[in-house]
Length: 366
Ligand code: M6R
Image (cartoon, rainbow, N blue to C red; front, side, top):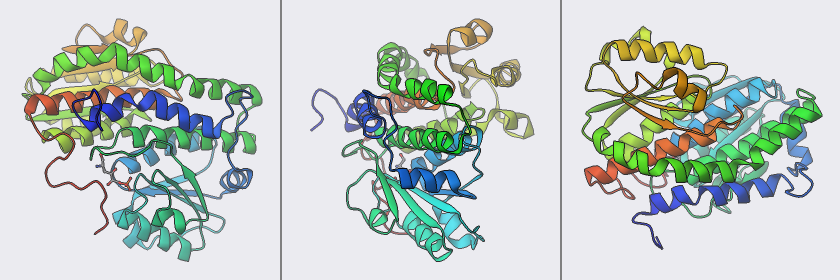
C-alpha cells in the first residue's frame, strides 16, 4: 500500500535512497568496493565497436544520460534512439556491436521489436529491466536487474534512478576494463556512487518543502520550459515529461545552448524556465543562457549548488540549493527535485497523480 504517503508516486520518490542503495550493492561489493558485474558482460561492452541504446519515454532518457557517460568516461561510441523510431529506421549495424535495451516493465512492445531487429542484425543483446522474467529479459543474451521493486505510479521515478545507477556501474566497469580511466579514478567514482543514497536522501529532506511552496505558483503556468546542458539536458527532458504527464501543463525540455535557435521567442514573464545547472565545467555557458532568459523577462527557477547560487541566484525568481557533488552522479541528484516539482504541481492542480488520463503503466501495443 501507500503507507503514510498520499500517493504511490510520492512514496516511490521517497524510496529512492533505499532502492538506489540496493541496486548499487548488487553491482558493487559494499565491503571491498569491487565491481561485481558479470565479467563476460563487462568485457563485451568494453570491446564493443559501438553501443546502441534504445528505449521509450523515461527509460529512453536514462539511455540519453548514459550516452554522455559511455562516451566521456569509457570512450565507447554510442548511438541512442527511441524504440518507435529505431525499429522502422532500418539502421545498418556494425559488426561487434552491442545493443542495450532499458525497460521498467520489460514488456514495452516497441522496445521489444527494436531488440528483435538488433538481434537479426547480429548485435549482442543486453537489457536492463525491473520486472523479473519479462519478455525483454527472455529474449536478451544478458540482463541486469534494477532493484526498484514494483513501481505503481504511472509516472516513472524510482525505476529511472535505478536505471541510471545500473548504467553508471556498467560505464565504470567498462571504463576500468578498457583502461580508459586509471584505478584511482575508478575508486573515486565508485565512492561517489556509494554516496548516492545519502545524497539523494539529503536532497529529499532539504528541497521538498521549498518545492512544495513554489509549485503552487508554477501550477498557474500554461507552459514551462526546462533547460540543461550535457547530461543535464536529458534531465531537463525528463523533468518536462514528468510535468506534462501528471499536471497536464505544456512543458518542453531544451538543450540550454539551443535557446537562441528558436525557443527563446517563447519567453515572457508568464513562462517559468526551470534551469538545471550544477557548478561544473559547463556552468558558465548555461549561466549566460540564463542571463539571456532573465533579460527577456523569463521567470527562472534555478537548481544549483552553493557556488552556482552565489554567481547566478540573484536574478532568478526562485532558486533551490542542491548539494555539491561529483559531476558523474549529478544527473541522479538533479532529477529528484524535478520529480518533486511535477508531483506538487499536479497535487496543486488536483489531477489524478498515480493514474493520469490517457496513460497506461505498460505500453504493450503500438
Ligand atoms: O516499462 P518501460 O520502462 O519500457 O516504459 C517506458 C515508458 O512507457 C515509460 O517510461 C513512460 O514514459 C513513463 N510513463 C514515464 O513516466
